[in-house]
Image (cartoon, rainbow, N blue to C red; front, side):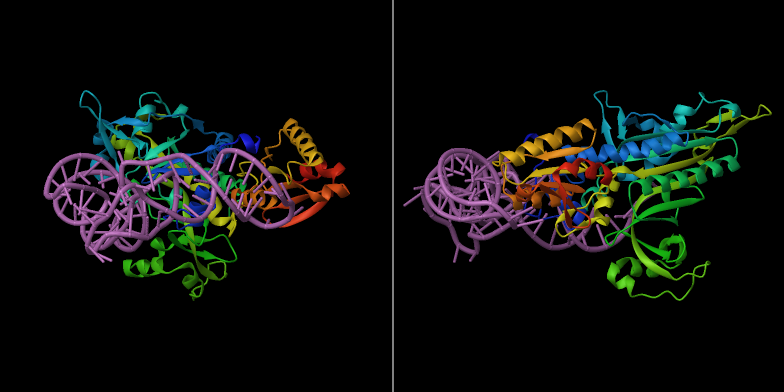
Length: 434
RNA sequence: CGGAGUGUAGCGCAGUUUGGUUAGCGCACCUGGUUUGGGACCAGGGGGUCGGGGGUUCGAGUCCCUCCACUCCGACCA
């Protein structure tokens, strides 16, 4: 992509209502813009990042034997009345009517729809287990949307549902998904913890949350500094006063708070803030019983499916990457999430030698299928550098005044370093870095 | 859903208290020139249903009524 042709509306000024780094930088960097309360448009850069995360999620799930489907976003109200959740979900469900005055709901989640899909199509234990998922828009009419993509009303979520003949098999799948989720978040380059959690309104017994560790997280966690143990404080403190008091504390305040107890591994425990980006539940037969979704076991007897459900907040992950990876100048995308890995910057567009080299390198990297953007705009050096830092490309090739000495520079966004490389070696050097 | 605010150019804001010609400023944008390694400078220029509707008045961005939207604090949040 040529920067001169790209729709990337960056701004120098901070939006007045954005307080979190991810919210500010995603808007300033031209990734997203707000359409209404909790509603966001994805501009080209935001769309690229979203698709990259989506494809990593899909890749790992498919490898683990899950089937991707796509359910309709508008669902009949009757579906929710049968499960009893039309009341339980309350105002969070956005209800609409069609021209015949029939009531519909914009999907906030899809347990019911997925059970209905499988019911009477999967009828034998021989067809189990089965794991279906989708990566699709959800709508929850939050009382108070905020923090940009971290708490929107419309958002992209991966929701998966598995069906089993036995509880043991369901637990096996639950464990498999835990491992799969770990692979996904690791590939995204995130620092995260798996914690024991409450099951909340979805119901079920076993439940684990996946949290990206970030100062601005809304949840408070207790994590071990030696092993990978972690727990949401909601599960380890009994009194609500105690939980509320801890949740109100800032990240800094929590850091100075000591925990006397030791982890079972003997390690030191400490408080951290986390952003919930994944949640997995063991549902049992809660939904399958209520919706009468049965299969025949080895003895030909009808039984409700044992189920589990698995969620990942895909759009929330975009913001999480930035909450964890940014500085005062802007975004620092991880390699697997960056909208473009390499930004080629011609310092002075009027200098023919610089422009020529830029064009040549741009073509060569494109041919090599490198995700590359070419900043060919007629702007000054400082302007283009600030812009590149705000957007957060991992590497920027600076073709500038050192070209006279046969050198170009590679700027590393994360390390904030510039290294000079002879023109003849630049291509190999980039291929080596990415 | 309770409490508090805000709404004026693409963005950020002043002007509203005390009604008065043609509604300002910064950034962004356009033209010309200078500049060219860290968001340049000079000159000129374009862009506004002052959130919508109704009312008071000779006259409303400003006063009154009403509706809407958005934000913040709290409650809520698979």
